Amino acid sequence: MKKNIAIIMGGFSSEFKISLKSGSVVHQYLDREKYNTYRIHILRDKWVYMDDDGNERPVDRNDFSISIANKKLTFDCIFNAIHGSPGENGLMQAYFELLGIPQTSCDYYQSALTFNKRDLLSALKPYGIRSAPSFYLNLGEPIDEDAIVSAVGLPCFVKANKAGSSFGISKVYHKNDLKAAIDKAYAEDDEIIIERFMDGTEVSVGVIKYKGKSMVLPITEIVSENDFFDYEAKYEGKSEEITPARISPLQQQRVSEMALRAYDVLKMKGYSRSEFIFVDDEPYMLEMNTTPGLTTESILPKQAEAAGIGLSELFESAIVEALRQK
Image 1: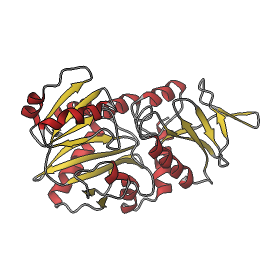
Image 2: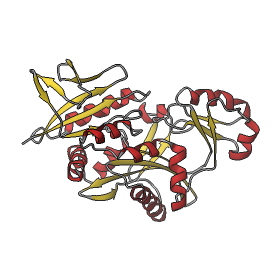
Image 3: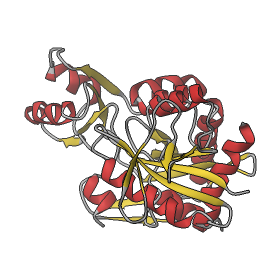
Image 4: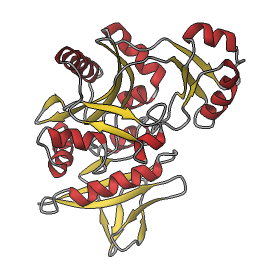
């Protein structure tokens, strides 16, 4: 019997349009011989099932069900394609755990931890996973520009602590520009991480659960036409993403081991895509995404393709793993 799969997409953050694209690709590529797929838009003002004709039906949040032709329909599994809140910070994961519905991404604790860049990097440090020297700010705290420059130097990156797709990020060259960059980051989050600029090769490493085992996908090298891998570079063609990355066998070994260690130490499930910068041959982690982009042009699907895993198989593998764990 076919499984009913709810593909949740949208969300509450600046990434919701990207999430809608990811969810639609999952809807398009999941095998219809095996699955009945339903696009569920999770937005601030409504949760609705969107059918192929653009008609909306409300979601009953008491049990996450919908009604079609006056019949109640429930779901065997949730495919999470929400980037940012509430799909990547643990809120939806906790909700589905309470309802007892399997879902494809990591559990609520891992999701909340990885969404918080500062907490993630602190949690992984004892396991030998390096990160850039950093300075933290919370909204309302005094801004001591001299202390920031003393801690991280210039240039530096000012980032929203809990945001994705490079929203709220700036590269700062001069102390006088710190205030504007901090204000930009606060527009996305009430916590900020300011990191030392590291000059080196940037790579993205995907790790997935595949046939019951953690698997590192072929590594992608990021070459941005802009000053860094910003929104334009990610989504508007202003970068070159090279898979497999043009790195040495030693670099490949070290960054693969580090990405896999982070995935296993945190007891992850589903997909992760971690970003690293090499300083000489040593990889430094920048962040981990647990619901990465899933469009045909996104990094993780291209990595899977390089490993011989097509989109249908990639998406199905997450569902199979979620149902197996149930």
